[in-house]
Image 1 (tube, rainbow, N blue to C red):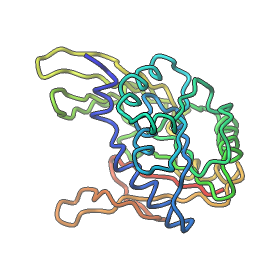
Image 2 (cartoon, helix red, strand yellow):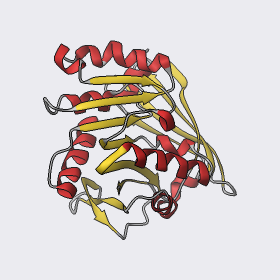
Image 3 (cartoon, rainbow, N blue to C red):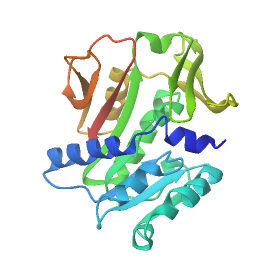
Length: 258
């Protein structure tokens, strides 16, 4: 059982993520982005997807965990052609001290930045990202919420050969701090408990956009998912919005321009 393989095949959809980043950046700036830094990159699957999208693209992945970075080198970077591998670099570093600047795009996805519990700490991170961007740089974040986000619950989803299990084990309404886990179980019944553990703060969208503006970004907009009229489910199309729906659970993007 390989928890990183399971994660990449249950949590991430890097193709759709990079589609959104590339299309949104072009719509905002009138040109295609070239340089990208993936903060809290883990296995750097997203950075590798970026490299595969253009011969001029360059990418950096930043993470503190040397083991997950090595897994990314062995399993993701190794799949790239030699010329593509030369255009990507993985850095074992604190995202606030990544020392990669003049970037078109910085990403912090999978709610990774929720690990910053204090407002001052989050603003410090956002400020460091802003300093890393060029004059046309854009920060892309995702966020989640909804009235079930504050509950203690367990959800299961069938995947190819295994079951993905998301557990919200505890939530403190006074601090908005929560403990979450990801478990996996193979179709043969072999279970991997607490493959991933997250202790973070559930930030609201107004808090996130306000902190981005306090950090100096000129704009901070929410991109909300549309609804498929036939199914009533999300249609995978995210547009800049000022009004969302009071869903039990939602995921959206936050886009901040320098």
